[in-house]
Image 1 (tube, rainbow, N blue to C red):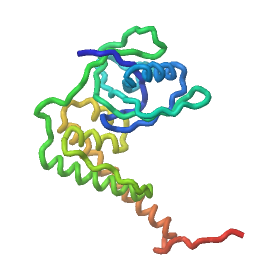
Image 2: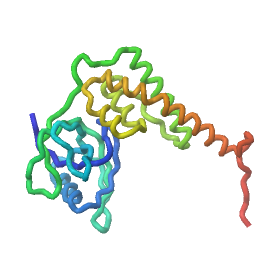
Image 3: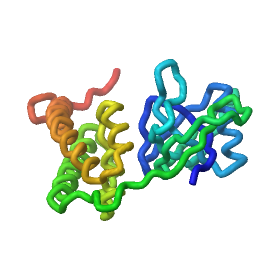
Image 4: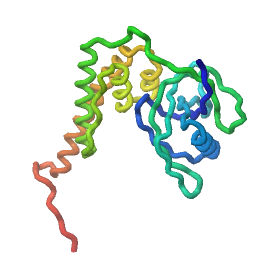
Length: 221
């Protein structure tokens, strides 16, 4: 069943359950934010088309649920959103708003498209390694969340974490096959892990001055 939803075309892919901070500054999206806060706090994020227009009918996006809002003195806002359900754009409708409004319908993965046990085990192992390397190269103390037991949720968590080109991310979001999404992730992880392993080596050598010893403390004058 189609429902109406404010639309925010962006050059970003939001996955269900993922956190996305946004800086709202354009007047039309200030209005979108105000209207959403007076409503159910939800809007749709869709990939932007050339020229900054809304993409065609059939495009898959994701609902953004507003979790936090930080109003700024000049009317801009910083917000934190969380990915909700996936949606398919049915049509753009004229609602008399300065931003796009669309009719959307929910999107679910196809029944029977679950990955095999070997695929899931490989995904979990690669995710754990990738998360470990991210922490080491960024010196982050907080742990990256482990993948959920549910294969669909696990695939979305992993897809939201990995850094890759937008078209591939959009393909992960749009596919209705959990196995295909996991397969794409299994292709993406190895080169990313290899690059992070190199980055960790450089990072840790820099911290020890390349000699296995930490930099000496230098007092100022």
